[in-house]
Amino acid sequence: MKKLKNIIALSTFIFLLAFSAKVSFALDDEVVDSSTNDVTTQQAQSTDENVDPVNVQEDENAGIATQENDNNLNAVNAGFDLSLNGICLLEKGTYDNVGVAYETNDPNIQFRWLQYDVENQKWSVVSDWRTGNWITWTPPRAGDFWIYVEAKTSDGNVQTSVYGHHHEGASLQLNGICVLPSGTMTTMGVAYETNDPNIQFQWKVYDLSTQKWSIVKPWSASNWGSFQPTHAGDYWLYVEALTSDGKMKTSVYGHRIFKSTITGFSVSPDSVGYPNSTTHLSASYYDSIGCITRTKFILYDGNTWSSIAENVNECDWTPVNTGSYLLGYQIINQSNNVIDQKISGYYVQNPYATINNVDVLESGNLTYNISTDVSTNDSGAQYRFLSYDLSSGRWETIQDYSYSKSATWHAPHEGSYWVHTEVLLRDGSVKTFTKGFNATGTEYRKSVMLNVANNYASSTNYCLLVDRATHKVGVFKGSSYNWSYLYYWDCSDGKPSTPTVSGTFKVQSRGYYFDSGNSRCFWYTQFHGNYLFHSVLYNKNGTLQDGRLGMGLSHGCVRLDINNAKWIYDNIPRNTTVVVYN
Image (tube, rainbow, N blue to C red; front, side, top):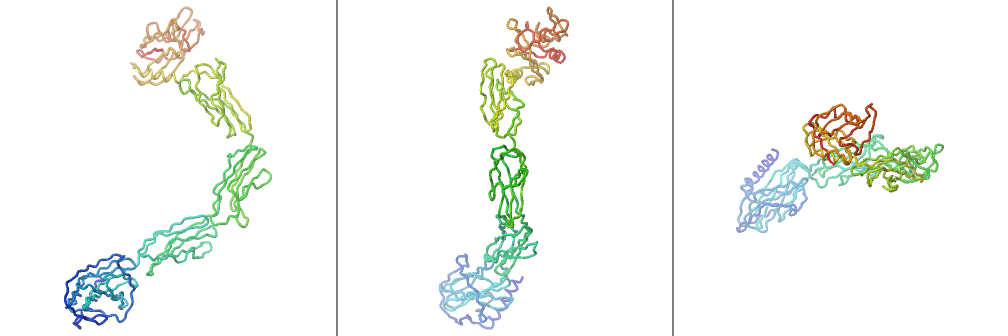
């Protein structure tokens, strides 16, 4: 609305001038009539590269050229033709690009630009007579202005146009302060948005402990500043930003400077060292205000404190005697005061090892994982594994000395072995442990039997398998072709001259016991003719006659431990599938 009022006021002013004088006049009082030429059309076009910046010059006597019929501010005189078709203004923040569209047949047309400050009611020359129809106009401040152009042909024909404009000036917004600690310096920057290429910044710091302000970065074009705090504590980081037309924005950020402190202290080996072995110490610290002048690694042996090393980040210490020590690290300021320290208890012991067991776990097909169960304070202990074959009387190295407590062993055949481990300590002493072991490949053979079982169906939720080669009985529960183990038992099946029948059968009758000669067998379960599951052989008075299992001994029946025979008698339903294979 303000711009519209300005334009109306200017139009009225020009109309009154035109009414009182019917002839054109220019600031140079020159009026020229010339013959009419062909009309050339020029449009107001601008790029920043084609605009000549012009400084505004105030001129109290600057005149305003007018024409009769000034309702549209255009007229046609004899001679060269000229018409102005409107002013274009492109806002650029602190300045504007201004141009006028025109039509003429004069190749030598010239232009002059003026501004009228509505608040101060003063005219000023922005650009004196020149050939270009574009200028760069920098208003002196934000406010309301008239921008006025005169165009003059070679024969003195003058046309004018005016444009009311409210100039906002530079815009500025601060979007937060960023703080980057860097050693003993604190660097801060402010994010901002502006249309002013000439913005200036000033940084101040307020120390809350002293309640004093200080300028740490005077006015400059950089939005970054830095300062070195003199002590730990709380500060305000304050920035002022100033545009070229005098607008100011501020922002503040609370920041704490932490005291200088130790950030790390370590000892290796951790917690336990050994006589005549190197112990490594390392440390680090953060000096926020540049006050640390000395660092020190220290030692307490139970009687006195001593210095191990100074002004280094790491060092070595070699204890001679066993015992309890304190190891520490200090940071010290220029006044020789300890700012911070870290202390760690440390023990120096002779190395020892106690072997509790050698664990042997079958992984299948006579392959075993061997591991040493050991209690030791020697992190550098090494381990060796050997086996001794009792059938051949030969030692074999499974794994030579290494830092690994475990090894993989493949037994060359089934049979009895000694598994032997040695622990070599850093002082050269060796601890040993030997364990007897029977290599049978049980887990592998169990997995083979399970695979066989899952090829069979059963009328019940149970299935029984007999492996004549390994002299084993497997008891499975589940459903057809989907079985899982309940039990895996040793048995004594038929001897070579009277082998147990092979094939697939069904559980039939059962009974408490039967006698064969002077032997008695308990808890029998029939699966085919005279082929039964039953207990090992007992005398008729109830004493054990032959309790051997794991070999072929019978006339064809499958002998079991009496408890296992009774379990089948009690739990396996009639018509359960029985598979005997070799």
